[in-house]
Image 1 (cartoon, rainbow over the protein chains, first blue to last red):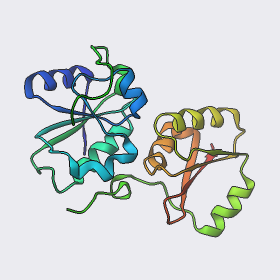
Image 2 (image 1 turned 90 degrees about the vertical axis):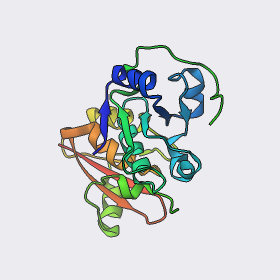
Image 3 (image 1 turned 135 degrees about the horizontal axis):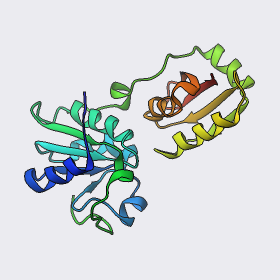
Image 4 (image 1 turned 90 degrees about the horizontal axis):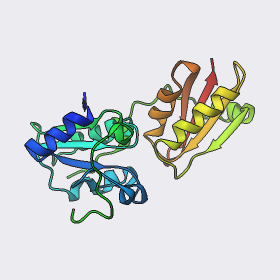
Length: 110
Length: 99
């Protein structure tokens, strides 16, 4: 079962727990505006790239409407390189519900 | 470490056999090619198409994106009964019968 977090809760986890945000939208959408500090791994590339990331204890997946991000969270959770104790959540409502600041441009560093 | 797969985490609707899927595909009222498309475009287009169909009509959506096989039926909800056919090499057809 994937935990679904409101955008407000996601913002708090980023600020308080340094949660990793994984944005699974295509790069063009990501560059137009994304949650500050988010990592862009387009959904189609996620299975192939999941082993290239140093996963932390707090991960949140974000997509346009909060549906695919649940599947992305399940996929990341199923990866052996993610601790059993780690929380891999999905942002409820996706970017459609995110009312806070967005960062523009490509991601600075994976 | 083994690479995770979408098929391990996506909840597919009931599957159709090859023959049934082929026959239904021939009878479809509308076929949407969604190969290469990801969330939320396939969901949006499926909902629009279903809204324009008559009860009992069939919409087929073709995709290579496994998560769509769960997300598209969820998006249309009770407006259609969903089944899926898998080619076995990464191609899927989602069958949506308007309720």
